[in-house]
Length: 346
Ligand code: NAD
Image 1 (cartoon, protein in one colour):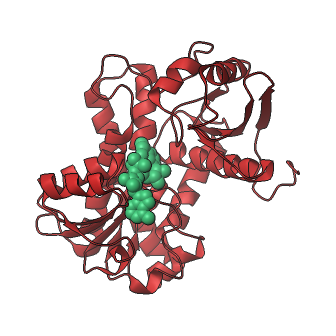
Image 2: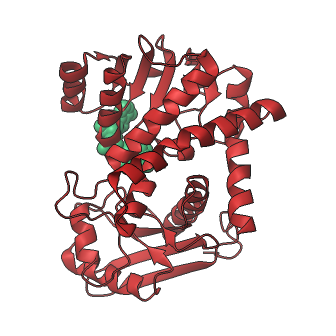
């Protein structure tokens, strides 16, 4: 397995491999860049088929966090942790405490938080052995879960994109096709419903669909139909890679704005969407509410400051859309450029 010559290595500052025989912990922490501050990023637990697959994932995710935090204007760098294992079978308090000890050994260069396969309760166990853990807030409504803030930033970004592409100041009567009404999708649906938008939803969990029907009057379509429905906005909030050769020609929307990470199967799809006159709102700009929330949990800022910071994503997106239009470039390329200007010059 190569590291320095790995195709996703991209100037990572540090990659640490952890193993503990007794608990069975096998984890990798990747720290991409700390020019703007310590690397904050979630800890994912996944039954990777190979070590190589785990390394590729952690390198890509960690780099993505550098860009996300830089664009969100946070004094943070990018990093990520992956644990190799099935969260339902292999996770134990001992394993999480061991991870806490290892993360502590990085002396604060990396701060962990929840991600797929880990929870607020897991962060508490990790936190028994290190202070470098975020996403745990005792006594608050969401206990540290960043999903409501991710949904709010996605809502703010979606509104900005609708204004840019459709010239509309409000969402009243706008139709949104929402893929995935889980944690983030549910809260986003609530914001959209309150703003007067009509919802078409898909999910694979019947209870999630029913909740959207009962509470927001959503219309349900099959999972493979959501791409081709008549809607102003397509909001992917389930899976990555959903803009691909199978879905591109089905899309009838004017705007894509959702919370899912890595929506473009490959960067070229940004250019293909531009040609179809579909405004693609770069996912990591839109879904930064979660990382802003987690960062503020640590610094103890007020709810008002958090809300204002999340709402500033609207202005960031306006800048991205303006530069993209002026340069004839897809918005995600411009977003990357602005992020690089920020963390490279720091
Ligand atoms: P979640 O698991 O709670 O919700 C995902 C939903 O999508 C679930 O209801 C699931 O049943 C549904 N789903 C799965 N496969 C589907 C399919 N083929 N078609 C339709 N629906 C499907 O996850 P979440 O926390 O809401 O995150 C959603 C997305 O947002 C993910 O891509 C995640 O990486 C991204 N994201 C989340 C956060 C956060 O704060 N939770 C932050 C940044 C990015």
